[in-house]
Amino acid sequence: MTLFAAGVSHKNAPLGLREQLAADQDKVREILRDLVGGGALREAVILSTCNRVEVYGVADVPGEARALAFQHLCRQRGVDPAAVEPLVYTHDGDDAIRHAFRVAASLDSMMIGEPQILGQVKDAFALAQACEAVGPSLHTLFTQSFAVAKRVRTETEIARHAVSVSFAAVELAKKIFSGLAGRAVLLLGAGKMSELAARHLVEQGAFPIYVVNRTWSRAQEMARALAGTAVPFAELPTALAAVDIVITSTGAPTPIVTREMVARVVRGRGTRPLFFVDIAVPRDVEAGVERLGDVYRYDIDDLQQVVDANIRERLREAQRAEAIVEREVAKFRARQGDVEIIPTIVSLRERLEEIRAAEVRKTLARLPAASAETRAAIDALSTAIVNKILHAPITKLRETSRAGAHRSWLDLVNELFALRRRT
Image (cartoon, rainbow, N blue to C red; front, side, top):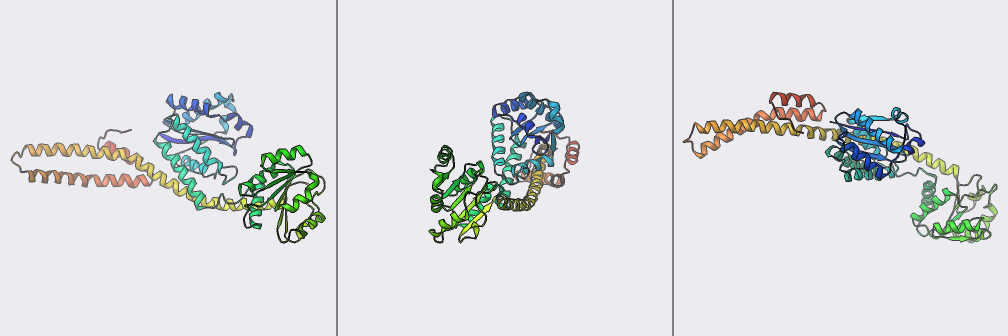
């Protein structure tokens, strides 16, 4: 039996095709039951997200199993298999193990270090378990994948650095203020990116939230979504005086927040910092406000520079994570090798024990007057001889297992000792 992983992802398939292939849980259940129940695969897990559709399986003939799995997926989703087949990548053996570890650890994600993929992998595994499609090989693979992902998260900083503009805004705010709890936020405009940044600030404890927009109904709608308060556009200067963080994203052709406006506001603020995050293009906050005392201004280019620097940092951390994955692949391979040789070791012990027990019975039958002490000594002697004989082949099997070259030795031992094959 061979372990394999096959699929399409953001790296090699267009979004439209991935959307067509993506299957909901009910469809995945149906496919898993067909594949495993029909005997095409011994075990199977299907991972279906917006960025990848992958089949992890154990099969006697992995190529046929992979093709059948994607035929099922295509049929369920009404996709032409001819459009999918040339794009499907396949990994087997160590490469399949490595791929599973990298996916769970978000090293194969569109955005390295993103946290969502691990939860998606866990959900896919749980669904396959519920369908009784998971056996010992995939159970070991996926539980180890979760452990590898945890190691990568705890031993590297791959997920620490913000790689979206909205997260970068929060990072900068946290550097300016000792903490965000209780910091008041003003949302000027109702853009999606500024709303996301505001939500991240709220998650960090920022409160209260005020919303200013030229369209009053839109200001009220956004305020409700953020559990905040809508403020009339005419009261913008008053709102600026009351808050600590301002996120702007209007479509105005010229700056709405002028240097003169901010200068009047800061006179009554003392030393309280005022932090502007200007996500608008063209910019909403006039250049030069940052030269006023305790006023900070970052625009979209500043935030993008932070994002780019953080992406480079994540890539550096990813190198450390890849080293962790390689070590874990080697450990997994060694454990898998041990699992494969155990049946042969058990059969070998049983075979020699049968021979030993039979010969001891013959010997004791010729010595009817032998004392209990003599009988025990003969039994102990024969056991010691068997253990001595077993030592060399078992040691060799374990050594070759850890080196990944145990298959020929397994065949040799089974043939030499005429062992019963175990599955």
